[in-house]
Length: 357
Image (tube, rainbow, N blue to C red; front, side, top):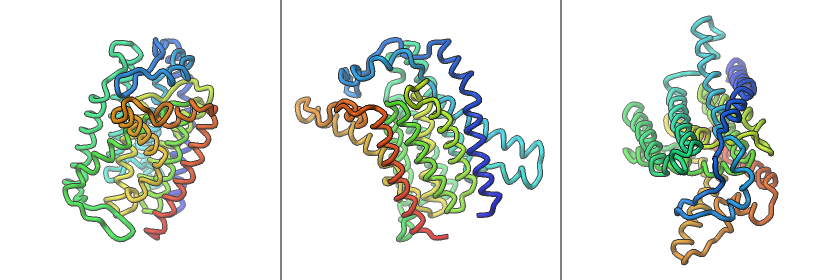
């Protein structure tokens, strides 16, 4: 990798961070002045029943703290991406051209999916805040959006790019047209990981580490524009996290989590198929904290259904279980961050060993 590529990545990440910091006061002021928070405390579980333990733990935070903080993430990243693209076209030269990382073969798809997820998530947040739709858009509707976006992306990979296999250290694993349902399943799985957004600073830190890990993998696989995109998102997430650490000024909510999870699915796929890379192969390792958190919800639901209401965890998702056991929220957050870093390092190492430069 040449120096200009490294500079390009650093500039995008730094610019995205400072753009996020710069736009936050105006967004925060708007969220507070318009009281963009839930009007009534309380959460309903996926089974349609109440969540008394969660509601007791978070009764003071549910009301009075704005949602929609995720706007900062995707807006800061978008300003950076589009801004560098405009700069390259207004002042065309070798330097600005190399700094532009909005490219059809690497970043258009994740950029568009991010915006779609952001808009749908924003609509969901608005409905929940306004009280027009209790609980916001139904899970079925949100899953339908993720499914349609995933299907379109999968068809693009399969029909336009000719992707029919997954990169592994033992060679490409040919799956043919099964690549389409596989990508949809992967997207759904990652979207479900959005349940990690439940404690101040938790989701922001975890997502920043995961996107950084995939940025490093993309660098190693010489997907420079994709790597730059990952680090631009990381910079934006860190700007959000600056204001989200306890006590949180606002929450990421659906507009942030949906944008990040479906975008991450595309990035995982792009680092694991078109370049015969190992993004998909190390996916269960790098994203393990998300997957375990999702699994805790599934286990809890199955246990309550099959064991006459008996629970495995005091409350699900897993991070709230630790809160219910008496762990301070900051301890849960920090330990999640530490574990995410460790598993990200393991995943990146495997990707490096499997595909040397």
